Length: 326
Ligand SMILES: *[C@@H]1O[C@H](CO)[C@@H](O)[C@H](O)[C@H]1NC(C)=O
Image (cartoon, rainbow, N blue to C red; front, side):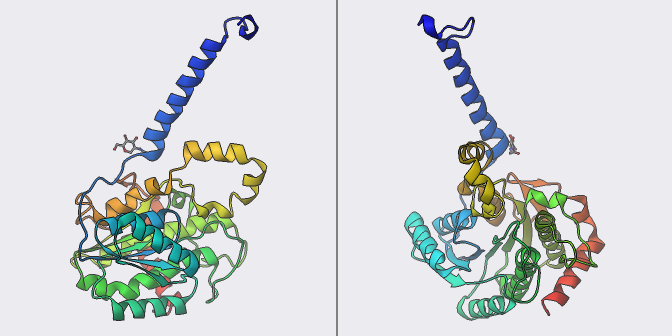
């Protein structure tokens, strides 16, 4: 063993040190990254839930959990092939047959209108709406209706969808509307003169703006729904290792794959862990009756102070109504 002795640093010390480091990192991950889980046991038999962007990532895991609780779950997906695979996944994982896919492209107002009118025809009730779908850091491009892609999909698409479904959601009260935002919204700001970046597009800033809009929309919606029994929630799910990072990490991944994987292992939640705050807001007894708040780690959290300016929340609502012709 002489060979492995480098002064004070021998094999045993090295092993102990690495062991302690691994345990330390695991503890860090457990407390600082994963955080609280939704521990509500509430059943949802006879209830109907819609999850947008449910074909992958946290949306798919959210759908799975809701199906396990007995809800009828509608997976609203843009990609029907992936959507079908997700339906099988949710059916298998939950043992429920009451899971369906429905085509929804949030980058198309026509698709949102078709989806909504079919839902209103076919479903007796809507107890839970999860506005989960999102695109992140896309290159500059426009939706079918000429909106910048991230703001158009993440905010305007969900704005219209929610409004079109709202009467049925009210009829089904007590019901809940959860909008998945992100901590990134704290770096966002609005510009009513050029909301959709017709001048200098910056992918990150546009994403943060769309996530700030999610928080403001949820807050204003909560206010407008006071007394109806419908409550609203915006959520930071945590940093998740999902396909959302497909644009951001595209280059990075190839060059530093091992570094990327270990960073993700340490700092990113799994999709199941990432679904917990959404589920907490959608089902828990603890979140019952609370409305318009921003949530993180299954607790109420402080959003960007820009999201707390009532006048701007109202202005964003009216701006959005105009954009989607509501
Ligand atoms: C989540 O909250 C729990 C207790 O409420 C706390 O111990 C934990 O550190 C928090 N985790 C994160 C990631 O904020």
